[in-house]
Amino acid sequence: MKKIFACVIALVLVCTLSIGVLAASSGVLGDANNDKKVTDDDYVAIMQSLVGYGTQVDSKNADYNKDGTVDLLDVYEVKNKVGFYSPNY
Ligand SMILES: [Ca+2]
Ligand SMILES: [Ca+2]
Image 1 (cartoon, helix red, strand yellow):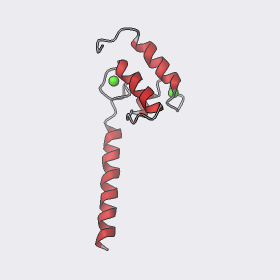
Image 2: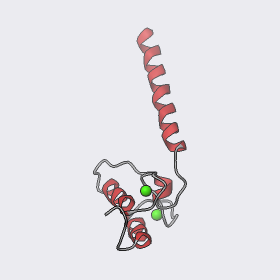
Image 3: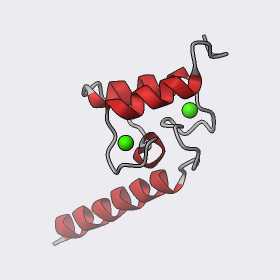
Image 4: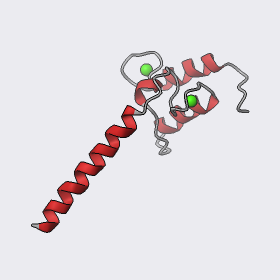
């Protein structure tokens, strides 16, 4: 019984922490990594998440064209927003 209770508590904690991460969204369209800026890092993060590299992105911010999915069109549009020069590189 104690093991079941411990598992339930662990599951609640994981769910609570996940909700906390989502609530921390910057709300900046294109800011996939939630650092409140739209830079090369964001379209690279989106690309990496699409190919299964394991990079976590804020799917709401990463959906730049607001079509409900995060795909290569969002990478393309974030790249166009950033342009060819970004102060990070
Ligand atoms: Ca960013
Ligand atoms: Ca999209």
